[in-house]
Length: 211
Image 1 (cartoon, one colour):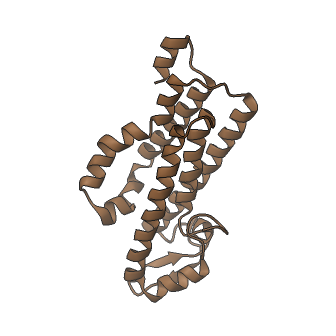
Image 2 (tube, helix red, strand yellow):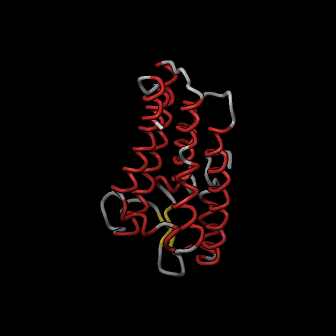
Image 3 (cartoon, one colour):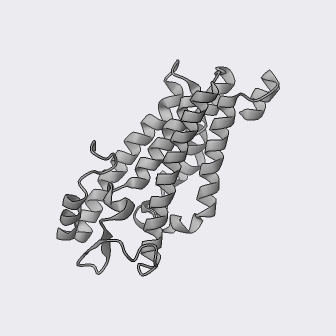
């Protein structure tokens, strides 16, 4: 999409550069932290099936690229101030996303590691412990919060003239709320009373003081 814009207009727009850079960061982060994928809900609970096959081979490539596709047909002019605000939003989302995921992964691999050993936890009947401080004491899914902030930042360079570039963030919000509900059911069945205690300690699911 970026090269098509260069072909049509001689150079890529600032909006197109931002969208490409944001998505490149997301992909590079996934590859660099690939080992953490093994502890995600997709692998641990859902397993390999239609959802992952269709999602990874068809849905993701054609829907996550909607912003860049939109910008080829509908070029947008973005001021440096607006670009700076969007970059800050994406940076904030990425920081929350990466820090919370890294904290969870480190705790799962080695709860005695200095970076997580001081965090407060709740014991469960399974022998595992639930984090109730750090990022995971803020909301139950801080990684989802970071993910959604980044999703919004991917869409904002496209302006507000059309709903299409915002399909991703709308769909992703619905997906993560549904995913959180599935995770809630699985954790309640697995941890029982300990999960109820955790929910009282951390009442907000994704958005602090909202949901």
